[in-house]
Image 1: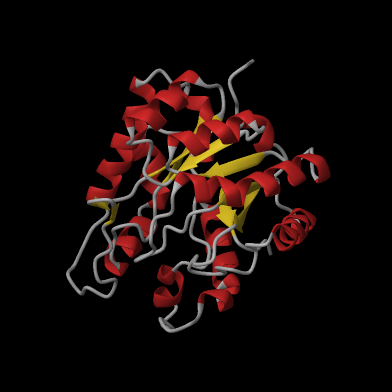
Image 2: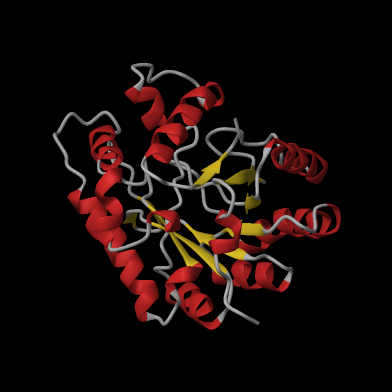
Length: 270
């Protein structure tokens, strides 16, 4: 099988990857699509709105979320993956997981892309990435023990983007040194994962120079900014609920498109 190549999916305009949370506790829509019937209805709605790929996640990675077992994660995923393969066979599927066992079962079930919010830092996930031909979305994040490091978001300490950029470089190098073809990889800057508002703002302002800083093509970045608290804080409305941030998300996507970014992981397409 030929290695996955993002190029064909990027012809003709931006690629919107529709987020499908199969969890009871995700930050924006936890519980709404936990039932397979609800998940399938949302999948159809996302595709009808213009999603060219769907990204399924069955473990929340919001601040403070409790980890789930691989068994529970797969129980949430399996019926939806099977139904999507039957009902939307032309839509490629991405699996948002950081667990190698779940990722391997997903690939066997027809998943085309693995999306790892820990940047394939687990050796088992890295081995799976190197030994497969699937597409990869690799995100920069900061860990603290078994969970994610989530500092107070309103920390007023001045910050620049350089630490986050170095961390994203390390994610890139980890995959390339494992022998993964660059055309299989999308890099995700990881807004909000271990960053404060000031650091997220600096990272957003660094987007025009990020491809050059990483020596990485702009079309091989994936921006996961949808409904993030960064958008509400930047708009001066930090208390705005996640479900009311879709307009801000669309504005951010339009801004990034002016800098030639083309791949967006999003809860709503508009």
